[in-house]
Amino acid sequence: MTLSVHVGYHLLLELAGCEASTLNDAEGMAAHISEAIERAGLTELKRVSHRFVPQGLTLVVLLAESHVAVHTWPERGVAAVDLFTCAEREPAERALRHFAQALGARQVELRCIERSARSLVSVAG
Image (tube, rainbow, N blue to C red; front, side):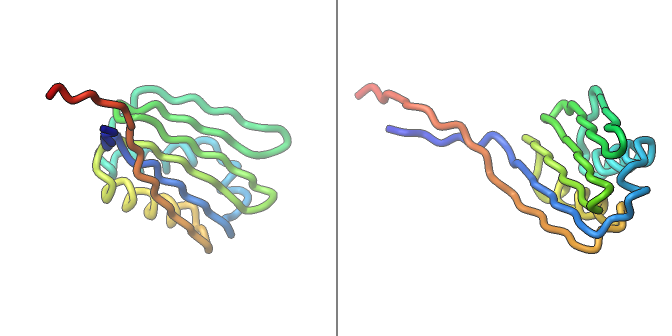
């Protein structure tokens, strides 16, 4: 028998129509994502970021509940956010929508994939 066990939610946020200066502001981006993490009730453990030349950022935050990654393309006005969490879905979705507003996105697409672990289980009869 195959058993499917829920392990979390993978939220994918696509943003467009953002100001280039906002997407290239490493300190501002870190503050916005920290606020989103707090709003979602998640626990930040460690953060690493990289600024690309001439522009663009990648910010990855390790969470007690999994991780969040932000990637920006200021020259295109675009950002992509991946949030994987084993916590509740709704607070994470609300937090990402707030994050999109904070970045001034004119177009927002949020998708959610329920993640599960599948394993073969033998049942003794």
